[in-house]
Length: 234
Image (cartoon, rainbow, N blue to C red; front, side):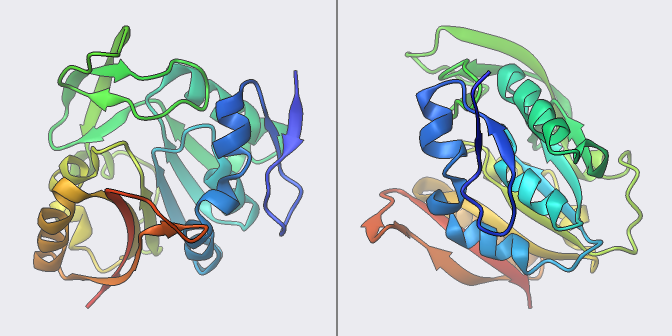
């Protein structure tokens, strides 16, 4: 099995590299999203980090290595399996609660339409229909407000979250309005699609959050209709 190191200069973190998608995007996760890595590095040790849309785990690996308690959520079967193997390969599996499910507005079952079933694949669609999708899988979907009552993490610790779930971010936030009002939730990094950005920022503003920074370029090039927002309380 091909193994290589994540492009994180702070530590030697090994990952599987089974296809070009993993090599281009997962192994190069620091180059892809330096702002996400900076967000993780500013989280205090001992805090809880929610990696929503963990994929094969590059950001979970960084967070776990930095002594954060990680809750990694990934519904795609191949990426979830690789996430667990990557954590185990780096002796970090015991620092991470891994959950093979999706977040949404309501707790239910729904179809995950795969864009690419290989590990490391992305751009899947939860619900709806994608014409170029040949595989779909019925997956558990949880409202964040309900899920947080079930996970074994005490609310007296600070919580931070990264949401990158292929356009499902707004629905996940709608299902988390009680959780996001809690003072122990202290920072968010969210992928924002153009069609949802205004509603998303308005929803979060109503819950006591402000957009502290917006990132819409990668290597000096526009990311098109996608941007990343770092949100803080206030």
